[in-house]
Amino acid sequence: TTNMSCKVVICALFIASGIQALPFPQEENAPGETEFMAEETAQQVGETLSKLPSILSKTAAWIKELGNIGDDVHPEVGDAIRAGSDYVEEASKNVPGDLNVQIQGHLNKLIDVVKSIREKVSSQVDEVPSLVEEVAGEDYAQSVSENIPSGEEVDQHIQMAIDYLQPLADALGQEGQTET
Image (tube, rainbow, N blue to C red; front, side, top):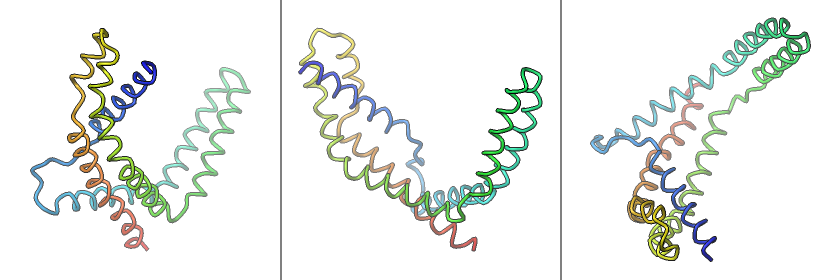
């Protein structure tokens, strides 16, 4: 059970640190500013996605030029690099027109998964101190435990992430509608 407890502690730490690493809008934002930021970000992402075929094509040309440098090492190295550029060029011709909608779908799935595990994660984080007591005598476990946020704080961070990602996903779906 000590091994299992350690695994739970490590998983809880991993989740808590991942949540705290997410970029969030500042708390002082005016009402509606988060949605505006999401729309602006979605517009930038939409512009990048619309340029993706061109970006990939230019990248393929650049990689193909690297093949000439590879020839100096060995002809097979140059050939392998040029073959890679052919794959990138092929990808540039196969970028789906609804990529923004596909990304929106993936973001919505991520949001749904986060919502479904939210309560469990928060309650597991609250159990960490008792798990640390089970591995008593381990100084590192105690020092780590002292730096773990409360379940309520983790829950708030998860909600902030949802509140940040949901308008972005919605705006990404709308971005494709405004471009056509």
